[in-house]
Image (cartoon, rainbow, N blue to C red; front, side, top):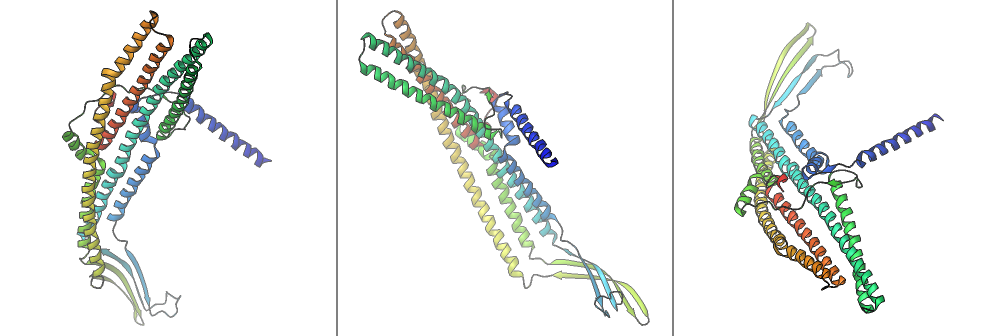
Length: 426
């Protein structure tokens, strides 16, 4: 009975916790881009995993700088029985400590520390940069999807009105059945696009919530706009900026430095290690006992094991070459990504300018002219609906062009290693 009561209490507590969590996430508050990025950097699992990788790399620094463990030795000689240690002829106990070459110990610690720095830049900072770019892109995808849904719903309503008007005109004998069928097809296509647009909005919200480490169905209320085009630096300036702050490139620099330190440590491994020992020795005989101290000093020369040390040195030299080649690869890749991203931004900007300077204005003016002509009786209602439908489609295409520009701009930011200007200015 008590077990059932306890199970019921645990179940009720779990349900209450779930309800409280749902209520907490049900409280809608506004996000802007900066808030969303900050939240993702705090609780995104990818950032946390990268942080742990850096923690592990720092822990390896402590291991690399640790001294060899001392050894305690206890020896008995001339025992009358294997377990009768109190009846000995000679006893010796003490501690030995292996002392490595100071250069080897120092270089090994340096290599580990520099490798940890490379991990911080190439893994943690690169992950943070990637998450920032993806969050801003997901944020703008939600904004784009919301505006697209508005325009698609407006277009669907116009298509439905068009279809209703065609049906009335058919009943009046003004149009043929084919005109009604065409209007019905357009209404169906518009309804299908509306379903698609709403589905895309739901997917965009789920993607943003996932990046923010929030429940998929958590409500989102975003504060921001797709308008505005930040100024761009010339290609040479952008490439210089990327060389100075791209985390994976800076990490590759540290990886090269670490490989050189590891090579120096491998060279120092060819030097002998020093072994120091101090012992307390007791000797017992028929005339009595005698105690005295004994000190031992030994050198470990890599005579028979020289092949192992030389193999490590050869491996370290190969790692240096690999790190240098990887550094060159990352550098060329960064330069290519910056140039490619800049071309994408310029192309997307031209599309936006075409809409803002020509297409959008002409579509709006066409709708105004159609409205005046309809009021004056010079245009039919179906022609007016057609002009309004065209304007709605142009608005949708314009928003898509704005989102494409944002996508290209965030790709350029990613390629150059960070924001290109204050995010509050656009």
